[in-house]
Image (spheres, protein in one colour):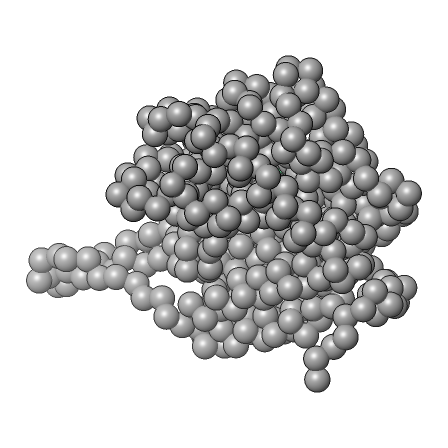
Length: 499
Ligand code: NAD
């Protein structure tokens, strides 16, 4: 029987839920060693949410020691592949079975519509764990060519202890992008979720234990970036940091790796992705893609299509269509309202930053077509309506900075050459798209956009089989797909010489 997801239903889930806010180390909850906690404010209504352990270097040490002990004992990495697979698949099933609860935890923390948390975030988190679970008993090693008197095995071995540091915009999905391949490869993990979004991570760790993952293989330490993320990235017994977050912090992570033990790093960073529309394109399809590509998750998406590079002759027509799609399809409502398509921004401070960037953009001459204003302030939450600025040039701040709010910058162009120049004129290289009916141009153009993913006549379509990540200052290393396993492993040669 399908459930009736009404506002009342979600209100009752909210009133019943008792979020756990302590670290999860070696299979059990643990308060911060300092005894300190911090309070998360709910973005949907500005009310206090959960109390969380305020981690520090001592807590990180304990979590890393637990992860190291689990790795060295072989309790996970030496388990039969079939057994490991069963545990990962059970974990994915448990995530689905606890979907409503996980969705609510995510919404309490980040303010996205609970139906989106359930239908997108929980679903993709479970899919991620399942995808890598299914790979476990299908990975082969190699035998290298040698002369007849030797045999050289080329083994793909886990690195050891992985530190995962994740952001708040899609917490559960991005956690699964790290946890799935890292754990499937046989590593142990210490996850440091963003201080804004720790609840789902703690619950995922509890469910992992319930599924049979041995204690210590997956640990969670909550707290602030400087106080927990930094000691994790500087730790001498961590073999790799898998980081998703801002380019600014990504640069610090590289520095910490260099200052400590030359640990590996993989960085998924920011973006300012171009969506290029030629005058021959299907403008209705382009409008839908541009609106959802930029405004989904209230614009708090690393690969959001925040720069609309549009042939001048169709700019006005396209903007009118984008406004119509936004008004009719992208309902900004309280996150517990099942009809909400987008919800709150992450924090009051972030909302104020977004509004300040908008104001600065207008001062520079950006012309507002619609939206981009604070709304629903009576809820006590932090909401900004989707908005578009037009007739912009690519040197304006709204076209250059990652706003991480629902703000689209429309930049007109006249020639294909100019469009490509504008598209690539950014420090980022995460994603991009081209809309045209001319397939020769579509392929020529998509080859030349310097980004990890380029869509033709669509936006933000993907599945687990496709790698995700960036070029330039959007980082390096790829999440998703079978290739993601590679960064959590390395090759080891075992050479046997015959007598
Ligand atoms: P952020 O960089 O502020 O924080 C990310 C994580 O790093 C958090 O867990 C935070 O606590 C931690 N951190 C902060 N300072 C640290 C330090 N000095 N040492 C170690 N860890 C530290 O990013 P955010 O605000 O949480 O997320 C938004 C950013 O993430 C945007 O720039 C967005 O584009 C990016 N992002 C990228 C992707 C991608 O796949 N490329 C996906 C989602 C988000």
